Length: 524
Image (cartoon, rainbow, N blue to C red; front, side, top):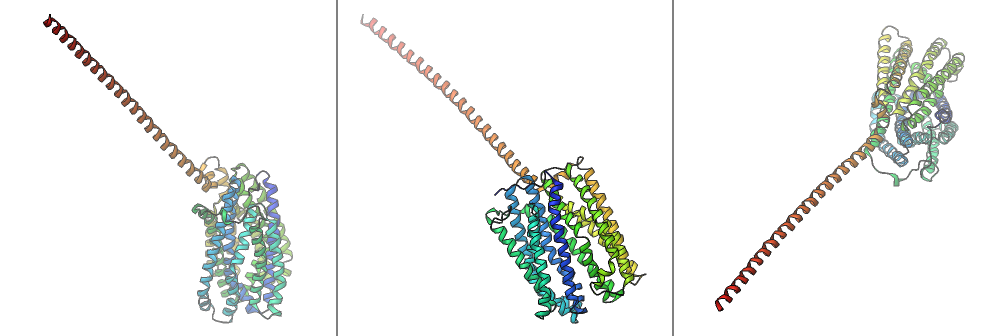
């Protein structure tokens, strides 16, 4: 089933073809998150607080599928770029197997989560947090596979199908939220069950498409062959991405603790609302990055290194311009945006949040676009390293500044400075890579490491096989020569023996003749 998948010949066109649907998905996903939080806020302040505290945990759950999906996407894209279609099909199955194992581990972890949550918060909020998390963890498999399939669809150049389905799922979720929360009187559990049901429909359709030949990359066990190097390459992208999200979840939890200490319960609520709005503002940049990642993987697989810097500059300019326009618009409607969540009478805090957003969102493309290009290279470990540096800077600054400023503004200052540092590091590193592509072949080599190693292994085996055959041929030749020599020696020996025998016969004949002569003489 080798349907042609080409993102290499026209990379800019391929980028837009992938990015536009992903942007639409990211926008609707952000809107869904905002509406979901809005409905929960109407239950009460405690429910709103519970959702804010749960966000780092649910983010990790979604991150499992998203990270494995990005690792699988990167692998599939590089295989498809080389024309190795069957290995791409095999990679998809490896991604699904990893997701199954992680889901089982998550459900096991849930058994111990209640005690941990009770230790952190023994009040009413603990029960609400657990009510929301149980359905999200038990049915995490659905969310993980939806994210995985969304990424693998992108690898084959189709971002439209998962985008349409997930947008439809989000719309259905927004409709189901008030029904489950209020009409069925399920409260915060209703928000979780609405998410599960709407995602289950999308999952069923995507799985049907994969198993019934509706995709360019088929999902069939006949293509499965366990390959450890595929797992390694998937994890080389997935683990750094997951750890990146895990670090951010830790950072969010740390910031929540600081905000509770400096601002009270309103602190985490303000922070979680800001993050939801930020996810909407960043949706186009996120879409650009995802589209670029798939195109980058194909370009690397096809060894079109000349196009990589051109695509990076092209996408970065578009992303910076888009981010700046969006954040300026937000600055002028900031109060209306926060009032949507019933947050009023906090004009000063909202002003400084919006002012910080202008700086953060304008420089964010330098880190976000660079990180996704590194994912396309299969070099996500660098992204993880830069994220660790960024979060360490952020946490240290926030902690130090909080000792002197106790109104929560230390969080804004720490985030802004760490974002600036991160963007500079990412941009400088990408420039270093581009400048050294021609000087250091190793940087090219890592792009298709598993494919090249596999080919090299085959070539080495062929060389060894040829050497073995050559040795055997030489041995055979020597044996033949020895046989010929022995044959010649045998012939010589036979000839000598014949000559000796002939001489003996001649001697005997002569003796016989001589006796006859002597006998005749005696008779005479």
